[in-house]
Image (cartoon, rainbow, N blue to C red; front, top):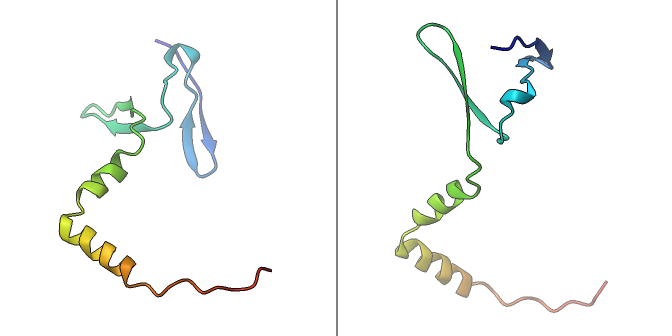
Length: 82
């Protein structure tokens, strides 16, 4: 067991995590158990999973509607360069 320091960081309370407990994560999940202990659980860096889940929710009708809207766009105007 190691004793650490609690301090204010802006409007949030923070805890200094000693090097022995360093986590390889940029985000954590914090919960409190029935005894009142704080539990810090590192979250894995699963970048893009929310984006991929959102893409999976698009059905074929939605994609067809997007393609149709793209085809119905007026042609680009030709303008003089600036």
